[in-house]
Image (cartoon, rainbow, N blue to C red):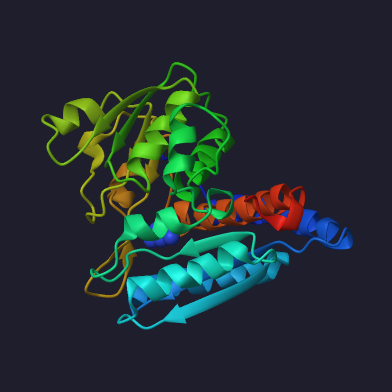
Length: 290
Ligand code: GUN
């Protein structure tokens, strides 16, 4: 039987409708959640992601600002900008769009953001809290993936989840979140042997590699929930995932399309983190800890 398509756009729309109400209520109480995104350089994919984030903020009433910087900017200048935003009580969330030019240390930049404004969930403090199961800003794509899976009605408890890809942004944190939901998690990566043998055992298969069409129906356990995180632009200009959607949808239980699956959920979780950041900071003197 053909899979149910997991429409991330629809799910995101309903969550964002709830958030619009929440932002409206916060504004009535004098609190306008604010997000500042820093975009360095001219990477076309980053530009389009940032535009989508800005639009989503505007739609639900979050105050958003994009600081665009030339690719030649020094790391020092970037760190000074971040520090200025750390001190600004109207900015509750700071996001530096990755990747950065090679002369800038991503690690140094992420560490410079105050953990309570790190709405990406990339700061080592937030990552560490996620690992030990303490309250943390959850990274947006992994969080969006788990929300999508839950909305299929699939219970994760005791299920076998296989994650392909071990990036800090998706693979590692999604494996942790799935484990926290009591799934048994197998992590696969570029050196994994017998990939197909492992993926065929998956009740839930998360593919986050960035290689167009690498997963076919031979990798998929019939009835599995297949989450495709890949966004690959073909020479034709078409966007495709890491999964051969047309053939896998014939045997999977649920499958996310690309585009329109995980992407809208990622942005939705960013909005959620920004609202949470604003609420937490509003309880603190001067808006920031320190
Ligand atoms: N580049 C690709 N995905 C992301 C993301 O989730 N956050 C940031 N900051 N940069 C990215």
